[in-house]
Image (tube, rainbow, N blue to C red; front, side):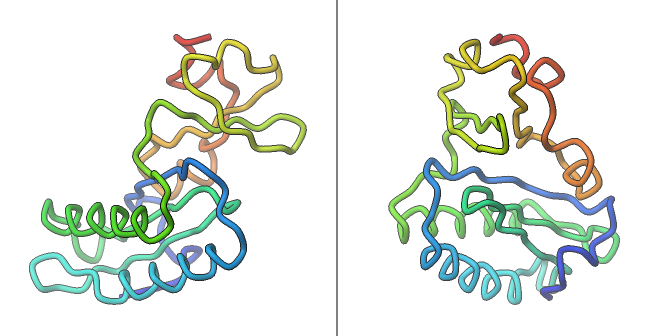
Length: 154
């Protein structure tokens, strides 16, 4: 059952998928429509999940589940991964390339291969797509590279 992302408790589980390119406005609208359709029917053990998503900066798909209502099971998580794989096919993009990171400098988001992160400007912040909750998404998603999991590459 789809609810507004802002209505989810901070403890809700999230998965962040970073696209390998910025989608255009038309692609973003279609992705939004497809994602709402998926979430409205997303189940775990035949129980609707209270879930939502956030499409951020035409680059990041954040899928969230309020596990206080129903836990996302292995099968339901597999369904969401399969859905994201369908999006990859529909838009000819990649959402599972973990060797590319997104950084933000001077209010501009750039995609960068992980092995070149040491070339990022000193003031660069990185999107930490490994965070797991809505609360962390709100407060810890964008952080200085030196405070991220990727600091070992700098």
